Image (cartoon, rainbow, N blue to C red; front, top):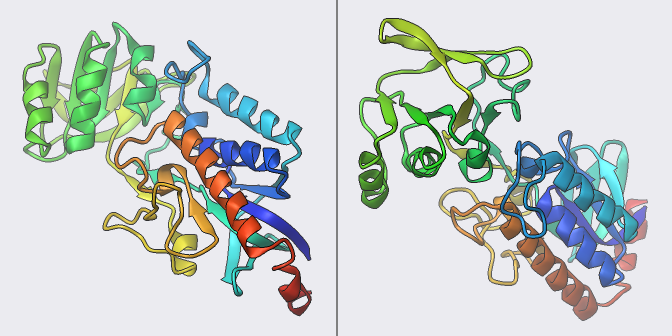
Length: 319
């Protein structure tokens, strides 16, 4: 069985940043990537708020992070983690047919944006369809955009997107908007928005790029709505199954509860990025990267406290 000082579950900004820092600490490190490496950052059409890059494709940014981590000596595995056990501060992970052991774990496997579940939705991500107004609003400067949702996240997103867009359609399934009063008041002051109450997106149309959406009811006598961009802001679900298996404490929304050092309720397990509640609702690439660096630093200290040979005491039982 291969024994690591640190296994990082997740290959997005948090996990890759953690890997870069762990390598600097001379920890033997493995990053486990899922089927879609790079996390939410990788599907951002353009990232224009990450220091050092005035404008960069999200996938390109995560590729640079991944190459950086590989060049520091971090190892990578691809697949889903199916079994995780905690044996006296030694963690057993199964990835595909392979079993690994680690002295510490960083959970950085993020959250999953809720999708509409429509055909063509996945194919047009980054080609007009987006899930992050903070990331991609500037891409649609002076364009016609739509936002699906009627909650606080969609209202805050609309407030930002409308500052760039020529016109914005808020497509709300319900007959009212539910948001924090300050956000709703700001939205109501906007002059370039139209709210479509009781309306759903039934179809996303476009071959190489988004062209239009088909609505559940007509606007101005037509169910076709031409759009340059469509933001889907209907919430996210934390990927917390592994955390549950390990008995890690979650907050009321299902995110991993961490302290300022990214320590979870279980000794030796840390969390960073969108899976954690470290930055509340503010989920950004720069925050995830910073949290990954802190989590790696905490893992390094943890390995030092518990000794270099702790896991070797348990290894033979699992060979």
